[in-house]
Length: 176
Image (cartoon, rainbow, N blue to C red; front, side, top):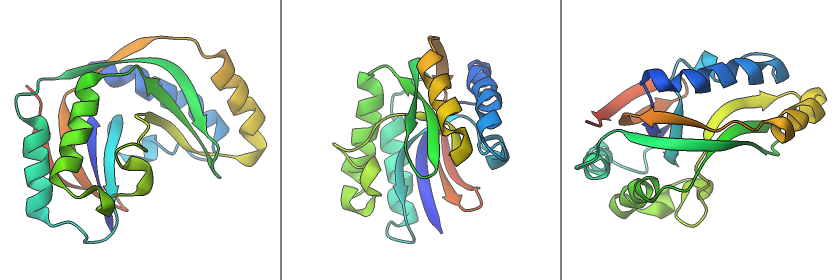
């Protein structure tokens, strides 16, 4: 079992991400994000197994959320990771605060314990829209990515840790 630390949105503004999940599910066999039963989020770190202790995770959540209110991220592009399977995601504009949260997590928990793509210098901030684009839908999905041109804001109001799979909440800090 692994676990992830994420910035998440329980705010009504996350409805736009949920609406994008509905659009992207047309490229999947099943609606991958809706089936998670987890709110829209930006993953900050993923760890496999029991490489990090629970007290260390709690300390990282405390440090990352200290003096932090809700964070508004502006998304201005829909992008893809090639996979397999192909993944579609919303790209946030650069945010000093988001980078600082990420840095704080990795200053508290040894970054070599984290999955490579979430480590400092490797991490690409993103909000996943779909994780299971079917191979026969790649061209249609890429056309959707090329033709998407909206800019929208989402307020992220919590930092949490979840175990997976399946998703099981571990700890949460509300940002207020």
